[in-house]
Structure formats: C-alpha cells, structure tokens
Amino acid sequence: MPIIVLFYEENGLGLKEILLLKSVYSIVSVSLDIPTGYLADAWGRRNCLISGCLIAFGGFVCYSFSDTFYAFLLAEILLGTGQSLVSGADSALLYDTMIKYNREDEYLKYEGKVTMVGNFSEAFAGICGGLLATSSLRLPFYCQVGVAFIGIPAALFLREFYTRKHIENPIRNIGAIIRYSLITNKNLCYNIIFSGIIGTATLTMAWFVQPVLIHIALPTAWFGIVWTILNLTVGIAALYSDALNARLGENKTYIFILLFIVGGYLSVAYSLNYFSLFLLFIFYIVRGFATPILKGYINRQTFSEMRATVLSIRNFIIRLIFAVMAPFIGWLNDAFSLAFALQIAALIIFMPGLLFLLLQWKKE
Image (cartoon, rainbow, N blue to C red; front, side, top):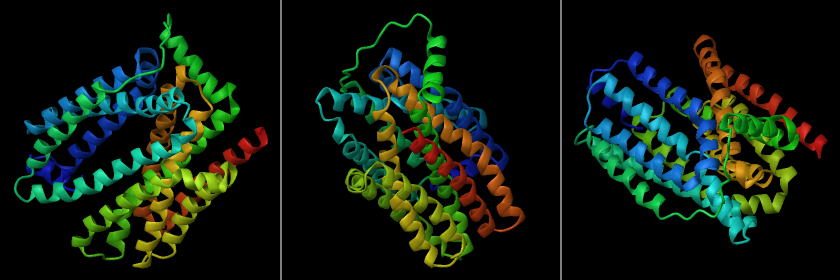
C-alpha cells in the first residue's frame, strides 16, 4: 500500500486508470461476497480457502510480471475473487472448530488473535515494502508472491469439521439464507446491519487518516510511522476484545463501540491539530475491539450450514454502505471542509447505528 501509486505511475498509469482498477476490485468483491460465502457453506470452507489462496497467488504473480493496464486489471479481478473466497469462510471455519472442541466461548479470543496477527503483519509489511521499494518498486511484488504462496500450504493443512449437505437449488437456498438473515431472524438482522454500520465507519476513518495528517501539516516522513503505529494498535486491542466483552457484557459493549466510534469522528473534527493523533490512536483501539466482538455476536446467532454466507452478507453490507457514503463524504470535504465532512460522517453513522441498537433491544 505505501508504494502502490508510485508503482502504477512508473508503469505509465494516471489517476483515472488507478481509480478504475480500485473500482473493478470493489465491484468484483461486492458482487461475489454473498455467492462465495454460500459456496463455502455448500462446497466447504477449506475448499474455498484453498481456492482463494491459489487465485490470489495468481493475482500477485500477474502483477509481478506485468506492466500494462489490462494485465493489472486481470490481477485486480483475480485478487478480488480470491479475497471473496476467503472472506467469511475463514471465520466460519474457526467458529466451527471451536464448536467441535466445545470451546465456542473462546471464539472472541482467537478471532482477536487473528485480527492482531493481520494488523501486526500489515504494519511490518508497510515498513518492509517501503524499504524494498528504495531498491525497486517491483521488488515488493516479488516478495508478496512469496507471502501469498504461504497461504496455499497453510490452507491445505486445515481441517474442517462441518458436514456439508447436498443442495439441489443453490440460488433458492441463497435467497432463503438472505431472507432468514435479514427478514425472518430480526435479532440477527439488527446485528448484521449494526456490524455493517460500524465496519463502514472504521473503514471510512481509515481513508480519513491521510487527509487529517496532511491538514495538520505532519512531516511526510512521519506518515508511515503513524500508519504503522495505528495498525499495531488495532492488533493489540483485538487481542483483548474478549476481556472487554466479558467485563462490560453485550449491551454495554454495543453502547461503548457506537459512542466511541461516533465520538472519535467528532473529537477529530473539533481537534484538527497534533492532538488528533492521540484521538486517532483511541479510535483505532476501539476499532480493534469492535471487529472480533461484532463477528462473534453474529456467529452465535446463526447455524453452521449458513455461517459463511451470513458473514459474507455482513461484508457485503459494509462495502455497499461504504460505496454510497464515501463519495458523498469526499464531496463534503472538497466543497466545505475536512471538519464538516467528519461531523456529517458522525451523524450518518450515529443515527442508523442507534436505531438498529434500539430495535435489537426492543426485540430482546
């Protein structure tokens, strides 16, 4: 990520082509999220993880040995497809494994560890990628091919305990799962949408970080350091997500997450100076808590035969809300100010977030 734009420019791409590549990736991911989640339920989580790792590996190979827009386009399609196959299947397999050993109450702890390792890796990779790029902008991609390959044998060594059932009409069954998740089971529906709203909020703030750093005139040399610290913060916080949930309980945890996420937007909006670095740090702590906790709540309320599909519905909602919200917030930033955009983003997050929280409590 720290060098991808420089890599594109070195290969003759302009901003128009770069944004088009990112749009294609998002379209592929959004369109495949639910079908691949269902595929994980019907065909197997392990099979999807192996396939996703193989396809993503192919995407990075394509990037490593290409220098044209259309080759990069193919790489983005492969990466989007690979990510969709992994998304949902990984958490579903983890939860099923915990059930197998009668340790599902420890799911949050292990989902937190997964989040921690991912963010630690991202922070470490950001530093390494920047250093490798000083030698060659293509060198990080060669190394990424090796990293991506590790996922293939890792997936092959996984064990799956969920017994798949024969499905005669997949399309009808997907529709039935969507209907159950978003209409029939109201409590699950409210959990999925609330989790989607919070997921969108944390994703949107990630795109606000660099504009905030630019606004406060932070030296460019510190951008990578701040980015690394924030990712490490998410990882450390995720490790303690189960402890927070145990201490506060489910209802208070919901309130804690919503208020601190919305409060993070407002506090940064009213403190666009160096103090905002500390506020971003607090926001990223809550982000680390939120992801494993909210996934855990959804897992508890669904069945093994539809778990990956339901988690993919959550991911789909996050991407869908972000696709609608992000351009509008970006326009507010350009037309008015960064502070105003952050304030409106807080309002957009708070109102539906509070609504679905109240609906959930009313249902209970």
